[in-house]
Image 1 (cartoon, rainbow, N blue to C red):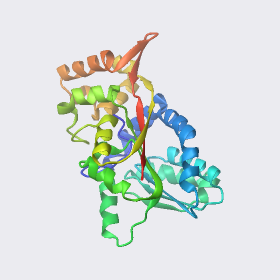
Image 2: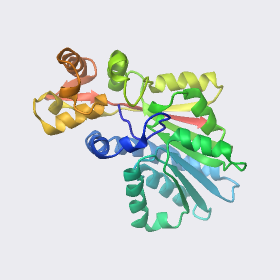
Image 3: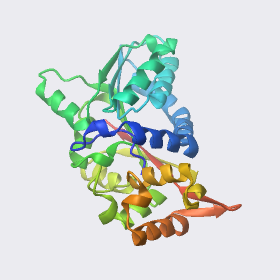
Image 4: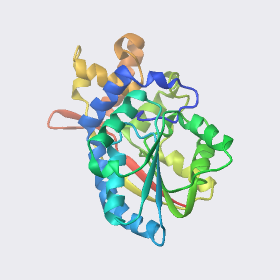
Length: 296
């Protein structure tokens, strides 16, 4: 599962450094997940920003679990291009110090981003929620995005409701998550008992998030993004990149050392035969995404 950012309420954010970040970045590069999300963003958000910004004197954006900021930077650039005369602010919630530093470095080398006042909240989603609730004045936002970050939340509807309540009128909340029926859902729900023991206590897909949105009475539009990841190297013993990918996909420190032989065999069989398709001798894992655009 793509554990990109972090709304963890119980996990020490210091764990989201080192090998985790290495696996995260390897996954992003080889799955081209950001590219797939950017295609959706380029298609949908320009029109949304025009509608959201109509009649507003300022636009406030909140990124939750922003990682190294690559997607945030692109989203903010679209906003700048569609509403060039409207001042922007950006608040960033990201618990990883390493990834936050990467984002700050990106801002320093991007002139258009330097024009935007950033507020950095190097903390978990739960810590940010507590901080907001402890303040008398609550900052509200015109656009909030939560891209691949709901895995660690204990109270899914509560977290969604909290951030939705931070929206101004005529604003949108974007949730990007692993699609229902994807390889991620098959893997993590089949082996929920064995895998949901460390960073997360349960697994949910976009299908589960939609149930929560409907329970909360929130209107949303959905857009599916098909995507695959070549995991052929995972089936080659001793392949370093395959090992790193297996560690990342199963949230293990060392897949082959941490799990029993029977469990490893079961997971590898599942990955090959139920989570993936084979094309020209390569094993392609289904890592499709769902984009949920929630109305204020």
